[in-house]
Length: 168
Image 1 (cartoon, rainbow, N blue to C red):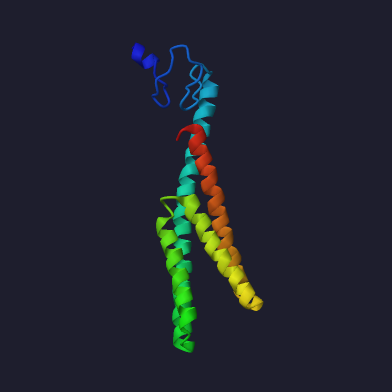
Image 2: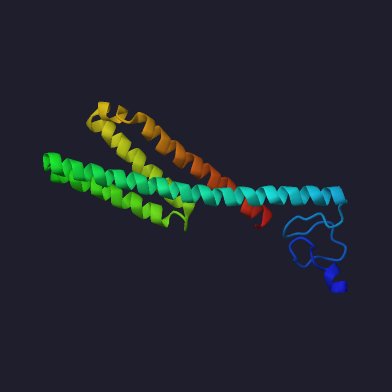
């Protein structure tokens, strides 16, 4: 019976018998039932945010695969219509890089979202430098892609903070 009193009822970590809160999960051991219920509600919300971030990473991965596929399609169209090797290779390299980032995204989401953003924004900058009018072609898709990546980055960063703060 004494061993149960020296463990946190929420996470099972060892706690002092006179502990007010658990040092690991911040559960209010000596708190009222209301405080305990509020804590459990917050933990449920935090876990939901972490799971949501994992789903956002999966959707972002799909978005990056689609972007890579469109770059491959662009390369094929350029080669079949104009036989321009340099541009064909350029688009294939961009497609390959984005596809690799998409594949690695679940392992280190923040790193590969930032890398994907850098490649895509660099590509858009290059488009603008070469021919400013080309930047405006498909501008809504460009905003949608960058917006999705920024949202994913924000969600993953918030999820990492929650994991660290609440030891999830």
